[in-house]
Image (cartoon, rainbow over all chains, first blue to last red; front, side, top):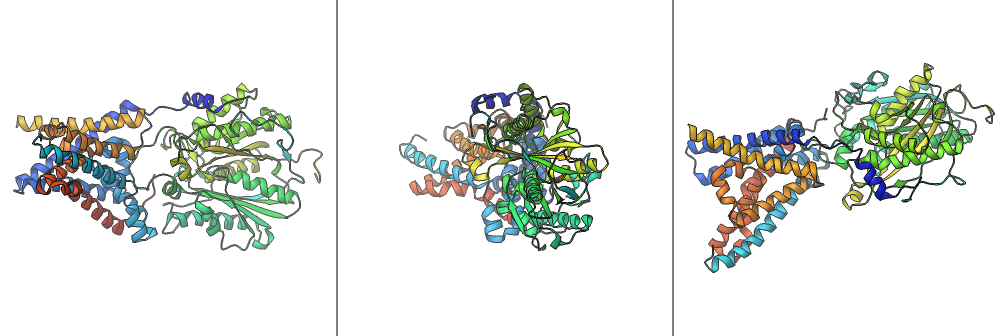
Length: 150
Length: 349
Length: 123
């Protein structure tokens, strides 16, 4: 029996079960929406407590980050994420989990090369490409602003 | 090899093991999830928290191998100096799971890397060396640990992510066998070394599909060169193809004229309950076939349920670097035939 | 009261909507979760630059700022502010200052968590 790689790859497709997308999407919508709503609740609470809006804008995501770090440490975040998929990945909780989980996991390799270096193994690219995009936009904005366009 | 399957030329057919050695003892050490699975009662030792009293997952894996070999010595009544060599392997970089785990034993050590096919590879090499008269006894040990494998190959343990339905769950487990020149079975009578086969699968979450062509190649070569029929066996067990690889193997071999479906199963499908344990396509890792063979299957030989089986250990040959560079994953499948009786006319039989 | 309810629904729908788009990308394409995070942040910068994201933030509040596109929005807002304030050199400092709170909080929490917690096996 002769079987080239291309034929085999097509053959395999019929065997691989698809992800249960409608169910995943509903879970992502409900959990993701709830996390945003929780953030909104903190946002309004902090404003209600009389904090300046500029501070509240920072404190709100920080609250979600702290909660995520605690949930990650107790080993419950990954259980929620297994159900929620993109629902926990896309909000700032996904970023916080991406920093906290390798930090805990690589403790045995030391505080410098373990915790310090591995902290950014997943989240690093987010910071790198977000910053790069902002530099490009900053340069464009400089010229547009100079000509009074924005 | 990327095109087609190997032809059964010279040096590619089945090897008859001279003076078939006896599998004198076997031992298994598993984690909690494996203990909770359908074969839970067949395993010798398990740990409630998968740490085995260690502070890192890598040490926990080494500890499993140390416990498995220790238990093997105890069950067989052998001392370290009675054993000519130990063949051991695992999935960690540079095989440290085995080398660190077996440091305590003064037994000549061969470190193997056959990915998840390592148990079959170890059994094959030790049976040939014992059968060939080089050692009166040799041992094969291997292990995998979910957490150490996850850390090395995928993401941190606490990282929140979803698995695809084709992904498999690395078994936390270790198995060990002791082969002896004397004894009354079960015997390793035939072996067939695998050839690495690569069919362009690049998805590290679909290893079953990457390994299936190797299993098909090895089984087809075995049937063609030995003249045996699938129905001659009580069971044909592949290592850790999972649901996807299992189905592909059964269907493609059927299309080639070998209907193994009546006796075919996969260790990755046996070790967990697909309904209640949420392991997607099934178990994987060196410890998967090692614990199923050394725990469940050899017990069935001991109580007479099995007389004749084929064990095809399957491995996916890749690293995190090769996968990130987009290189396809090759498979390997080593075959070992275990029989309750020596074949008629065997040398020394 | 009715206004708050509508606001909450908007937060939920927009935030959840961002997650559903990502879930569809995960399930139907080969894009890995790490790439989705990068894509979302860059998309947030672009959407802010073309003027779409600011109105969305006004409309949906934390529904737009909590997803990682909101992280991109902070990058873009930060750089705009810094360029207005300091000229071209602001392009180098603004992006990170806009997101400094989040990044520093994640680093601090990650470090403390590493000191306090040990890894647990999955079941």
